[in-house]
Structures are given as structure tokens and as C-alpha cells.
Length: 268
Image (cartoon, rainbow, N blue to C red):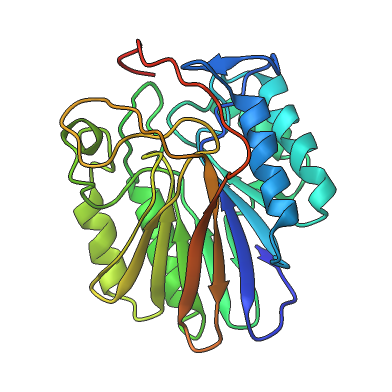
């Protein structure tokens, strides 16, 4: 567990789906992912938001190389904030753990005066879809139970609700109903954030705020039958977690930098 000393409000930045390569010039569908991530991080620096922590919610790497995780660590170190990672379907667990274990990145629970953040692993090695195994669901249930006085934000990589997109919903969280059942047993579960879908959404299910966040590189078109790329810019999410359990949040996107996407590809 990692303890954060915050005031009445816990402020968090979420960055997701950086898809880095060991080679900083590596490209995903034509987009140089290190450069696009760096542009997003520059936007974070310019954004008037004094965050207490940063979350990176999966698909940190595209090639799974140890060096790609070192690039991520080095790029975020100048923020002088604790940075927490969780894996996505493209990540290589051993290399992620090797680099992440050298600092605070792999803490699964982050707590402050009024809130806790639970970082879940929905990766199924060798698969694109996600699943929370029995141990992970039990860990979620236990952590929610042992601190009922703390409002809770849960972070994972795969989407736990339908995105109204046929191809995308086939690669979401397979046991989403079990996950939502656990949340339904705990009044302190206030919000869920994820990546994977390379787009933004924000809604409520059973009183729990559900939020998807854009990638720092390519973006997917919403509500499509087949794989489709969107023209919107990369970005990040900011969250203000208030003492009363309410959440203020928004997505910021690049406005002065653009990257050309290779639209001849039919997948990634």
C-alpha cells in the first residue's frame, strides 16, 4: 500500500495506452508513440492541475521490451509525483515487473485521507480480451471491505461495460458481470477508470461513475462494427476526488500537435 498525504481533495492524472517501443522511433499505425506520449506529457505540464499522483492504465508497451518500460519511467520521472502502473494486453509481465519493481509503480492500493485507489490486473497472457481472475476479484472485495470509510476509485485496463462497438466489446472484460457484482456490494465504490478503448466516455451504472480515457497515441472511432480509427487528438484524464465522495473529471487533448495515422491498416 502507498500512502499519499493530500488535503480534502485527491487529484490524479490518468495516462493510458502509451504503446511504447524499445526504439524511441517506433511507430504504431504510423504514429511515433514516444513522441505522441511526450506531447501529451507536455500538455500535462502546462495544465493548471497540481496532481498528487499519476496512473498509467495498461498497454504501456507495444513490443514488451524492458527498454520500453524504462522509457516510460524516465519520461515521467521529472514530474516528481508517484506514478502507478497496471498491465494491459500488450504488456510483457516480466519486463513490466522488473522495471516497475524498482520504484513505487507496482503498488496495487494507494490511500489518502478520504480515498483509496485500487489498481487491478485484467491481463490474460496471450489474449486481447481481459478477465479478472478469482484472486483478483477476491482482492478487490477484501480491499473494499477493509476500509469502508474510504471512497474508492478502481482502475483496470479492459472496459467493464459495453462501448456499443461490436469489435471492441469482443475484447473487453469477459467477466464484467462478476466485477460489477462485487462493486454493487460496497457503497464505498465510487468510480472506475480504464484504457484499452482509445476513446473517452463518462457515465453512471448503479451509482458508480464509469470513465474511459483516450490513448496517448492512436484513437478508435466510437460505436463502430469493425476496427476504425478516429481523427481526434491524443489526451489524458484528470480527476478530482472530493471528501464527500464526488468526482470532478475531464479529458484534455492535444491542440497544437498532430500525428498522421496510417489508415491502410485494419488492426493493431
